[in-house]
Length: 165
Image (tube, rainbow, N blue to C red):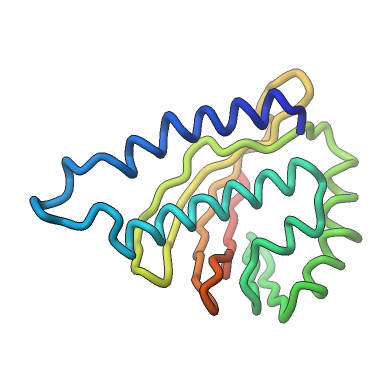
């Protein structure tokens, strides 16, 4: 991913998410602004942005490292369970990234990503991301549901379900 896109992504994230994370208008008086659930939500968002960043850098290690294992991928016609990092990384290196290179893809960007349910140890996120070509045109948009968990104190994606449009 070109550096300018990465910088723009971080600036946009700061503008969108930091005010939402620090805004206390929806919290009752005396509520803990840094509650374990709020921290879980922020951690789960960060993991998903790390995943997209790794994908944009064609980084099989980074793409595999953001998951908690066993990790589940659900597509329109398949369900895959990866028991460990190595089993997922092999698929990313041998199938996913080569297939992506054979398209007009230049990078992937989140259109929306929001928390739909959360607890201190698990967060459900719903989002939409787009694959973008070199001309900056989104040519494929995908809806996704992600379940992010804390395992042994580490946040990672546990389930990724997608609905390409």
